[in-house]
Amino acid sequence: MQYVLLIYRDPAAAEGMSEEDGRAMMAEYFEYTEGLRRSGAYVSGEPLESVQTATTVRQRDGQQVISDGPFAETREVLGGFYVLECDSLDQALEHAGRCPGARYGSIEVRPVMVMPATA
Amino acid sequence: MTSEAAAVDRVFRSEFGRAVALLARVLGDIGLAEDAVQDAYVAALRRWPADGVPDNPRAWIVAVARNRAIDRLRRDRVLERHTEELTRRAEDEMNRYDESADDDTIPDERLRLIFTCCHPALATEAQVALTLRLVAGLTVPEIARALLAAEPTIAQRLVRAKHKVRAAGIPVRVPPDDQLTDRLASTLAVVYLIFNEGYVATSGPQLRRDDLAGEAIRLGRVISTLMPDEPEATGLLALMLLQHSRRDARTDAEGEVVLIGRQDRAQWHNDEIAEGVALTERALRMTRTPGRYALEAAIAAVHAQAATAEDTDWWQIAALYEMLLRVSPSPMAALSRSVAVSMAQGPAAGLALADTIAAEGSLAHSHLLHATRADMLGRLGRSQEAAAAYRTAIEQAGNEAERRLLQRKLADLPEPSQPRTTR
Image 1 (cartoon, rainbow over the protein chains, first blue to last red):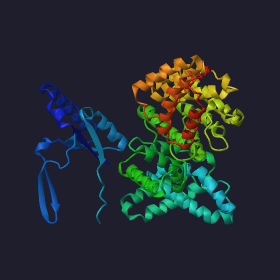
Image 2 (image 1 turned 120 degrees about the vertical axis):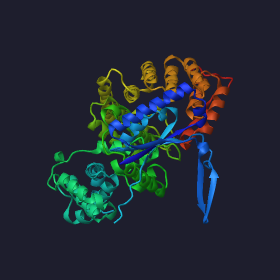
Image 3 (image 1 turned 90 degrees about the horizontal axis):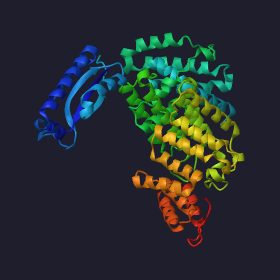
């Protein structure tokens, strides 16, 4: 089954990172992604632009409401994701534990919903 | 309840976990396995009173539950895509266990089920409810009563937990070796939590609920039997048996708490002490670095083997607590060590340790810290300080019986002008 690893991080911590540390983190991510590909688990994954670039859309009473950023201010924000094919939650948790983001922030592991087959 | 229905209940209580575990492995779905075994229970209620209890009830339950599971798979349209393959697999697997199968041919798969129910991806309260329902075979009303929770709360907790197991793909298996140590530790922690919930009710008027402690011991026995080479599994079973052996002496006829020093040791269950001591020795022999349960069992064994309270070897207990603090540091173990030291070396040495713990702050809201300090202060003749500590302890005790005990101790304190000279 498929799992999404949602990578959360405190943006303030990311901003305070030196250029050198930033490069080191990128190198870790490249290596991690390469490992996922080799293991066959990798389906897709993308880093995201900062939360300041986010726009939230709601449809209310037939009106589209557009607002700047995510509505609720939380300390950790979504910074990127991977979609992985795993045999069980245990395997997904193992991959998540190796993700560099697990050390810089936290990883939320969510199963991809299996939609019932349409006839 | 008729005697036949009672017989059905008795058999299902002891066989439920094994049947669910076997079906869960074959079907890969704990909810479906539970429903199928529940169906078999309903069938047994109908048929056993007329036909009599089958010669091999375990095989009967597995065979009937298997058939019901296959029926359910065929009926369930949402699962249509999986039905063919699953049904075939279930039939292949389970044709081996027909009604004539003897016990030895039906494998005990409960270990997988226990690890699934205690998976760290589930919240602790979900782990407890799932384990009691699926492995121990308690009904929802029984679990609600045992945990002092409302039935709908427990029912909903179980539905959510089973949904997470299925939807998140929590595997029904014993974890691989590289994860086993951690996962076994968290699984044993769930069993011990269940035991403690029964040993000292954390809230409410009654001090203990034996049923729950008994279920935890049954679970501990299953794990230690199926993992005979794991010292901590054996250690936990030993610890629970030794603590449980004192259950009848822990409260008096009025339901008041009796501490270990004043318990009537004739009321201790000697068969359980003998088994607990033997298991403790086995757990300690299995490894050169005993874990927390084996060490706590050893401490309980020292208490259990003293003929009278005065015979207690407090030096040995203090030494065991020191070892325990190295393996598994916790403020509660440190507090217990201060008590042992106060008994071995005198209240001043114990109070010095207890004051260090108080200064550190993490037990500030535990009535046990204040009650311990109060006792030591009282023994040192510092009655005013002792009274103040007892009052704080009374405010923080969550259990009525414990609160009454502390009030009695407060009332028993001598006047400050007459310091006591007991050690």
